Length: 444
Length: 181
Image (cartoon, rainbow over all chains, first blue to last red; front, side):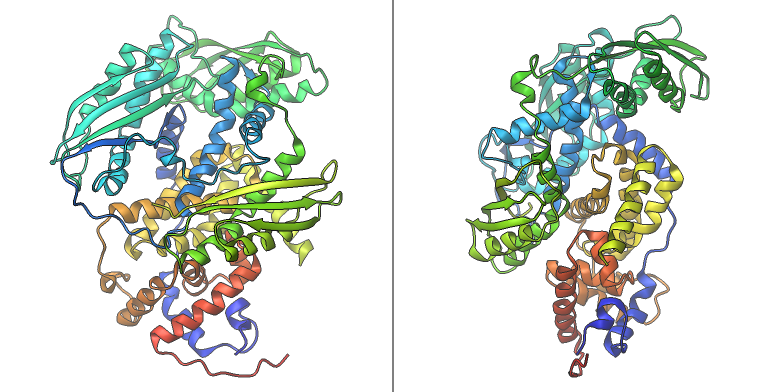
């Protein structure tokens, strides 16, 4: 039977498909977007951007060992792919930190950092492996895999308070960053005991331990469980605003959060001018006044270059801040810009190769097709995991010349090679020979 | 077809870019275009009664993070990945529910709906999502390819094989016809 109707509803309707469509249409989604929830989650997610809550929690002790394991069959790479997407997105901001509390060509720099990581390996490395297992300490015991989502869920519920511990101390020491390592026990009833933490700063660690001690987790499947949980705090290139006579510490934390959200737009102001003035560097100081409703009444920029000053001020002026504890708030916010310099950061930045970036971008766009190669095989071999090494050439016109792949499984390799063969790469500056490893493992 | 696809992609990039700049109307447009796909992806993994809630959750997260997306053209695969991740996490944290009650309260022909949904959920993962997008959300094959990032060929294969399995499991017998072209 022709699949035309199944494909695009053309041709003679297939009665079975028509019957199913009529039956199931009542389940189709038609609700409008919940703006209220969107705003609420947006605030929460913005806060998350500061404290890079690491997923590499390690459960070091479990009182029982008989908890069931979740089925791993045919889960494919659904979950860790988006971790990578989100991880890459945050890398751009995180990279800024490496030159201190200054803002520079973030996108270029972000790419450089990614490239430097890639270049340390063979050619490009998409790093598709699940990074939650990148730092294991000890072997998983008993039902810990089954409990990890519950633990993460509990931590995520308190992440705003946890990052608040860091942000308040950041007001005192704007260069503060690092990892707080928390250790605590989740009792059989889900309550926390023995919460302690070290790292970054005593006040931050103590505060984090205090917040964790108040979390009510779900009951762990494995019974009372001791957990180690690292939290990585980075200032992300946005120093807190300087103290003023009428802004409380909470206000300063709030202002920084909203400023941080607009970091890329602020950087763009600088980057646009940088094209014509490669040596442009300096500080734009924005003087702004925030009203009781969080709106910016006035914002002016000065100190660097007229266009950049005005552009940054306009970006800040458009921000809808949260409600300050007192109003109006008058504050001067400095933004320091320096061009990216490979001389100053040779090991961190490496050499930006736009061709490699293009290859990676195109592969990333079609990663689901590559993933599909693996998942199809995973249905037959649920334990299948490993690496496919793809080798291919990209001609001057962007077409793939030869494409081969090996490793893991011949069927997956053949499929991956075929997918790459058909990828629409852009024209590179010169013909390229690429080696690209893909690591596959079933999702947890 | 290539030109049309390029136009669609360019249009999408413009909408995503506007959304990244804080244009809520543009984000609303993204919601309009993708909410069914997100619902289908979620419905492939969680109970019907919980899917709509997760759709809102996914778009709320997307609203918060869309400005972090480096490549606007990657929006479809990006938001679907968020949806899969959220649905998988939710499914892990939720006790399995009886599929028979997993139908909307006023469902017409509720038992048949439940049976069809159960059969869809029992499909291999590779086919399940595509089949739900086609039969529940009403997307066509080309729309599924566009909104999921899968190649048209993969979608077509998934539909063909998925439908074959579904017929078997629901006791439908396809009437074989010659494909006259």
